[in-house]
Amino acid sequence: MRRGLAGRVLPAALALALAALPRAALADCRLALALGLDVSASVDADEYELQRLGLAAALDAPDVRHAILSGAPGDVALAVFEWSGFFQQTLHLDWTWLRSHADIDRARAALAGMERGHDDFPTAIGQALGYGGALLARSPDCARRVLDLSGDGVHNHGYGPGAAYRNFPLREVTVNGLVIGPDPELEAYYRRNVLFGPAAFLIQTSDFAGFEAAMTRKLYREINDTMVGGLSRPEPRQLALAMARDHRANPHLQ
Image (tube, rainbow, N blue to C red; front, side, top):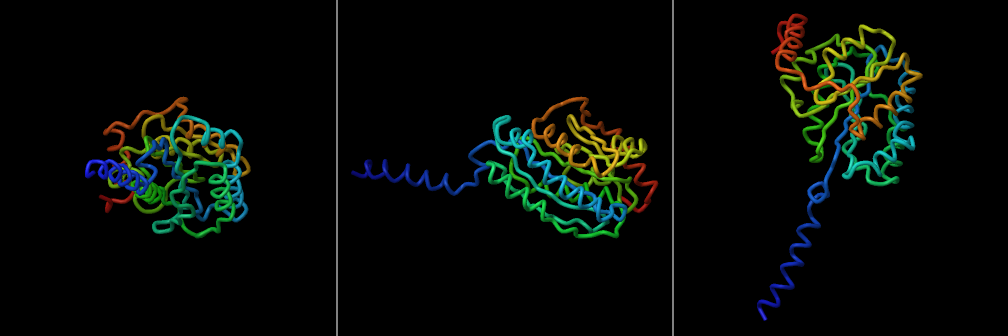
């Protein structure tokens, strides 16, 4: 009788224990994706609207939806924040599972309804990288962790990207860039200082009017893990050079 009772109780207890676990522990997650949007002083109100609505529309694009829901096996988790100055980062969408069309609809609505947190601070890319690294450090347990940073200017405040890569949990993160503006020097800056990790890549749009199309291409490529002209993980020497440039700009950085 005891054996029969145990045979009934143990499977039931096991089922309850499994039900209590977060889904990430039961099923594979293929991607944790954090998106960082530039809201520094160089981004005016109209340009912010193009970013806000462009991101929501990109998430709603049929190809992006298909990539999320019917692409490679495993779930996708999304988080979105804005960045500008040293302490001016605003989290608009905390980690959210995109497992159904309804999930995507809710995320899209939240992004379309974002209200700008800051509008008169400088361009602190190092702090944006640090914030994104900390955000990804508490993401669901996924096979890939990607930080997608968009911006229209080079770093000009606080510690730079090299110090961020040294001091924040970014070693296992791929950092991609979306450059807004036609300036080839801005593109070169992102390629040299911001891109990081396996198959990291950059997309550039000449102005904010092209943000939606650029973000759509970027999301599709990131979600599908398409490696086209990707960047290998920077060698220690590359990181050392980036940190040296940061130190020359601000000798108080560690």
